Amino acid sequence: MPTSAIPTVDLSPFFTAGDDESCRKKCKDLIAEACSDYGFFQIVNHGVPLDLINQAMELSKTFFNYNDEVKRECSSSPDSPLPAGYNKQPDHSPDKNEYLLMFPPESPFNVLPTNPPDFRHRSSKELLRSDGENTENGRSVSPTTTKILEEMFKYFVTTCEILEAIINDCLGLPPNFLKEYNNDRSWDFMVTMRYLPATESENNGITEHEDGNLITIVLQEDIEGLEVCKDGEWIPVIPSKGTLAVNLSDAIQVLSNKKFKSATHRVVRPKGRHRHSYVFFYNLQGDKWVEPLPNFSSAIGVKPKYRGFYYKDYQALRMRNKTHPPSTPEEIIRIAHYEI
Ligand code: OGA
Ligand code: NI
Image 1 (cartoon, rainbow, N blue to C red):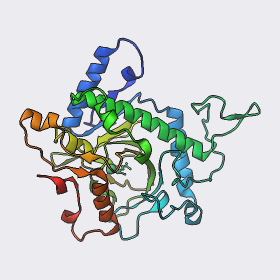
Image 2 (image 1 turned 180 degrees about the horizontal axis):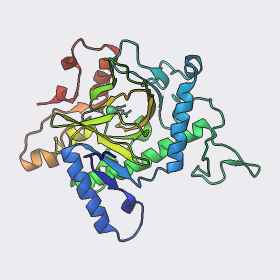
Image 3 (image 1 turned 120 degrees about the vertical axis):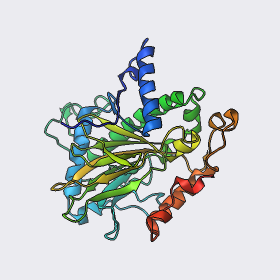
Image 4 (image 1 turned 30 degrees about the horizontal axis):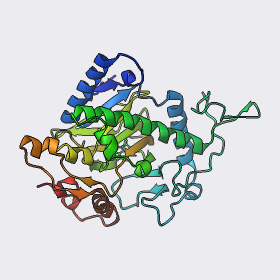
């Protein structure tokens, strides 16, 4: 069994009250090192229940197996900030995937599938956090598709809040600094993705890129494909049951003046079968001003490596990359656009 060079961190000390400070410190040291070396690490005991993960993966497979007509029933409204619901990459795109995107459960933009209505899974047990909600008149009912997706979303938020607090400490920022800065949860979004099997001639799932947001969590199916770039070399992120991959994104790289990396990553499609994933983007609100914090620049006599920008302006440029793809990869707007 191959092992990945990417470090795996056990987050359980952050879920148990009590005097676990030395365990927490060890985790933080591992994460700090991974964030400056790779901008990437994996986590176990992250709080997202395994049964929910299994259900969500099974749900993704069931949904994407429907024909296009059924999938297109959940199409976005035109005023949605990002195309919510079901979407497929256009045929001319080098990325060969389709996806279902959702905003926070209360968002008016969500168009979640109604199929399958009752979701049954081989090992379905008590799954939902709110006890009793999945029983009706004392009889047990299967969780709905919507409920599973909403639960996944809520758990991902909680895990990201913990990761944000850890990263805050790893960067030596005042307690709760990132939490107070990133205080609007309405812009987070989650996608579940399906990649086509590779063909003889091409295997690109997602072209190499960095994510624009703050922190991203990836739940991979038991199928390889995700790779992270370090010093020009592509390192596979080997999937393992119950393990989540975490990558830091552009906003953290800018705030930390490049102390922590935004990981360059891609998906290579395996042959012979579809690949499914869930990707959660812990995101900033558009009006946030993003620039290197004084702690990593003026206060320590280091020049800022980026000029500041409103997050929404960067998002608009990234969106343009997709709607009006430039003719060469060098013209794609990445965070280097703001480099000084
Ligand atoms: C992304 C991404 C990885 C995956 O959507 O930005 O990197 O495994 N996805 O689907
Ligand atoms: Ni990505």
